[in-house]
Length: 430
Image 1 (cartoon, rainbow, N blue to C red):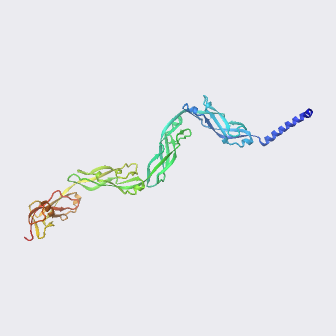
Image 2 (tube, rainbow, N blue to C red; image 1 turned 120 degrees about the vertical axis):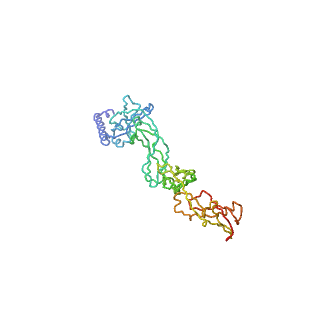
């Protein structure tokens, strides 16, 4: 048996070697070794908390954030890999005095079947600096303008401050934090979730990729108000000093205002009226001027549609000094309505207000109120009713008596004195 095994031993060994070589050749022909380069694989810095605990932050220097990785192995393995299977890490635990880290390459697929994984470079430099934290108020910026006839009202935000942290060199550039709300053409209220944007001192938008914020978006509710232009009018109360009178000219400046509010409310408003109690001219002897806030007399929720107008209007009441004019009313123009049938009255000259055949009526008023007024426009009658009331009698009888005159003047004019005449009541024709 031994002789059979050792017979032609050299030829048998040679045959085995030849078979192995043939197998290797076949394998390499069917599944050869292959190398593939995966470009721009992101470098992850791990264990950053080591820096954070020291109030530091480290970022890979510009230009080294990605690396090309060459992977070698059997074609069947390599061709089934993608860039997503390759990870490159730099561990802060290995940070040295030169702030450099060694790169480690791994694969989450076929890790035991890959021959080599080589990065284009094997070390990266960290830019290590102070970690700084700030807080900024969030400003709301409106983009565009509402539709015609509408304006911006109040807004509310879900949060009004944001916490920001990052490298001191970047944090120091942060001037403002804003959100932008698009209101262009809006005719109704707006609710939106909008991102927070950071700006530098020049108003330029900052790259915030190296910064972290406690929130990325906030909710903004923006009110859109209807606008309407209305008249402003004023009522007046009180009486000026004696001898003075308001001429009826009341000036309100501005006389028209534009207000804003819910459309359902503004639809019922055509004007705002300042009440008489707010414009009291008592005891005034010259033009009276006062300022009034019209929003005291408008419904709740109505506001100014103009930023420059806060509600104050000026009310001026013109007050003039009165003049007087005297009119002669002759006896034959004085009536005696209410005189019992069969009786007549004769005015006795030279008594009370009666002069020779006439009574002088002194009227007071503004100059323009006397325009075109003549004696015949003044009605004078003996006030027999008042006489009977004052003397507690029920009928006028014959005899001598002093009766008051009832004087009716044209509109606007007044009298200051009460006129009386002495009359003789007698039977008709006697």
